[in-house]
Amino acid sequence: MRIFRLDPMMIKLIITVLLATFLPAKGGFVPFFEWLTTAAIALLFFMHGAKLSREKIIAGSSHWRLHLWILFSTFVLFPILGLLLVWWHPVNVSAEIYTGFLYLCILPATVQSAIAFTSMAGGNVAAAVCSASASSLLGVFISPLLVNLVMNIHSAAGNSGLEQIGKIMLQLLVPFVLGHLARRWIGGWVERHKSLIGKTDQTSILLVVYTAFSAAVVNGIWTRVGVDTLLWIVAGSLLLLFVVLLVNLAAARLFGFSRPDEITILFCGSKKSLANGVPMANILFPVAAVGIIVLPLMIFHQVQLMVCSFIAQRYKKKNEAAAAAAISKPVKSTKAAG
Image (cartoon, rainbow, N blue to C red):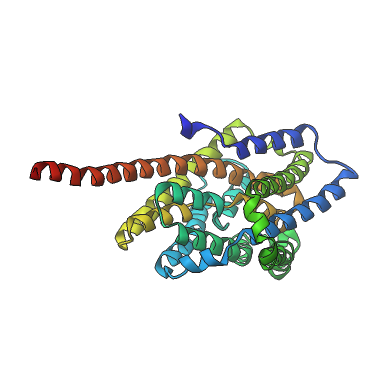
């Protein structure tokens, strides 16, 4: 079945983790890869800024009730569920795994996949573009604040919250803004080379993952993470996603949103961004801890793609069936009249 297929990016992530496991960066290669990672992150967010269309954001920005709920789901509902999971502590696994779950819960939503699934399912695409882009941009500020608020990592990482936000603004927000400002000159080129931009995004993420897991391997990540732990992360990801989807669906119907808006809420309010999360973790957490902390995020990323792909296909089939029924009705009534 299509739902159980790994997406190409996840396969590349697995290969990158295996490469870091057997050939981790050591010695003099470490500062080189750290520098390369910083440059790749800057390029990644520069391209994100260049892809952001002001016209599409303005087109979908008026639907404030929808955007408020999606932001609530992303930055309030998810963190509350993450805290409950840590408090519940159902399985005896490494504390870094629970930290990883809590970390993924405070991240912004994805942009590309949220919009793609909304479009496939027949949702409000303009609102999805606006909401997902706003979430990604606000996450640069909100996520590090939430990290310090709910995780108290500043003492462990050796940086204050203001220092972390400063680093994130320098490495993520400044390239993003520069890319968006440069859109008037490079926007056409970006639109014509979307596949190349996508490959640049993926390469940047893979480089960050390789650097993070190299440090994690050197510090003995695989002595703390076994098959049972990986299976628990999959189960925890499914549970977390199921609860969020259920709450979002109930809220969309309770507050009287239209069907297209309901679809947008489901797909924009349930996603977590790998593209934002991995680079941000590289700044927020000690180098030795990054690999194991982003592990739940990497697995949740695949789980959300598989589950949301299935849901989007179901919506698409229902829409096609409704459209076919609407077309056939006038034909039947005409025959009856004749």
